[in-house]
Amino acid sequence: ILNVEQSPQSLHVQEGDSTNFTCSFPSSNFYALHWYRWETAKSPEALFVMTLNGDEKKKGRISATLNTKEGYSYLYIKGSQPEDSATYLCAFREPQGNKLVFGAGTILRVKS
Amino acid sequence: EADIYQTPRYLVIGTGKKITLECSQTMGHDKMYWYQQDPGMELHLIHYSYGVNSTEKGDLSSESTVSRIRTEHFPLTLESARPSHTSQYLCASSGHDRVGYNSPLHFGNGTRLTVT
Image (tube, rainbow over all chains, first blue to last red):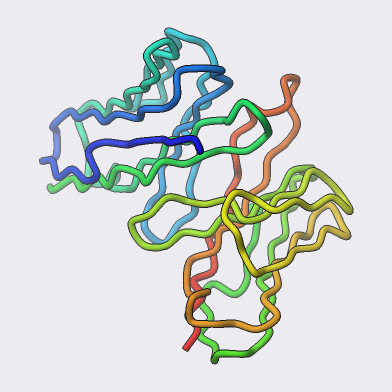
């Protein structure tokens, strides 16, 4: 059974702070790693799909890096804003099939 | 602007009732999925479909069933609801890419089911 771990479980930061969190996944037979943002009362929204070791992706103030050899991805938010408050999910594409295995998420709360 | 729709958004129902959770997408995606999530826990895949008349069970055992008679429609049915079915159910779809499994998921807003 694949295990995808996210840390920390939750994070409270002040507006303007930069922050980052981690997703750990099995390092063998890597296919793809997804990041999603899930705001309260909305549906999860895809941020990034990462496929190559060393990949770096950026979307506005949010960026992500990928290390497939050691099995981790970091998500960074620069200058956090209250609208960044959400649960951030990562998901690992399992080798045997076409399915995503999700982590439990990191809950981010940004105080103004 | 949602391209994938779930109804109802909230449902409170008594034990033993039959329920169907609806999911429709307008993107023409072949792949559709049902995930179940309990508070603070991971999303767990309970059913998926790669196209019309194709359905498979996911990693988490579920007493629910699904059907895929049309590309855009992927309903989930519980024949006899029980309190243990109380959870949030999320429907998702993904399109085809060259590799086949790197397309992001598009999620609906979810159905929060409470069985009393």
